[in-house]
Length: 100
Image (tube, rainbow, N blue to C red):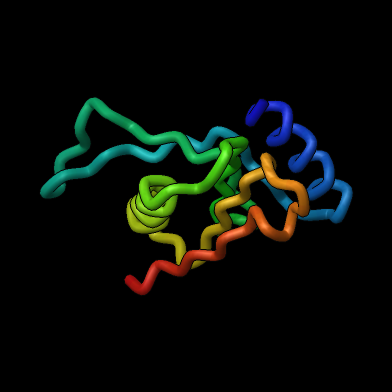
């Protein structure tokens, strides 16, 4: 279901004239070396905001940790964790900030 919500969200954001990239690959760099693992963020909006899409019963700390890791690796400040599996969508939003 997450991929369907992601596609719909992309459509809504593009309709608002926002630049959106999906499934953005971020290399894993450790001590200056690029390792064979990479991470994939769901959406990058205006090259500033990382959006992680979920469709789970409830958000758990590992979801926030995942987004914080993406923010650090991509050197971005703001991230949104959106869980679409809620009765009222605004209950599914979490805003996270990378304090660098």
